[in-house]
Length: 227
Image (cartoon, rainbow, N blue to C red; front, top):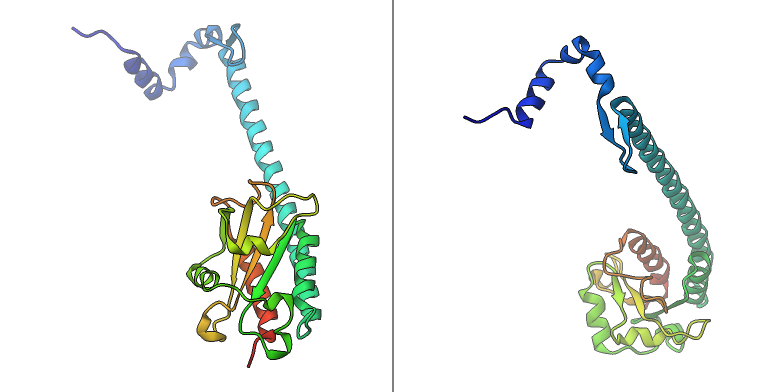
């Protein structure tokens, strides 16, 4: 015949809340192992310790939420300043350089470059209009969102040269430039961000911010295209 199990006892206590009211001395005498040591503590002390741990966890969550909120505000401010710089330079041949230099400055990006194809004749001699291979155009057209990850020898990485620290890009973000009303929505350029830090751009990172950068850059740079 099977004896009483721990589960039976637990079920009985859970269904009989008045048990410890009738046996309060027993409740006070219960000793449990301290979670952070070998000494025994009373049930009340253990409950207090659990409550303190919960409060500490909640405090850390609140601190993390505040920090994330502050980070988001800072990013929004930088994006706003960058957008204003782009808007002021729209329609000028200096726009690509302003866009890139402000992108590097506002977001501390070590390396950034871009190429456009199908530009107006007045801009064909500019560096940003330098010829790119069909592979680059095909790759840009294949991107439904920015590529983030290791630099596995992309042609676009060669546009970057060396960073200020002298390093070459080991991780990249490749952002297609396109507008629905331009060239039937097909990309007319590629924005490339690079870093010697292999963890700066990874396949696991979110692309919402990069999508926003691509949209703003596309809107501004489309004015340099042939009619």
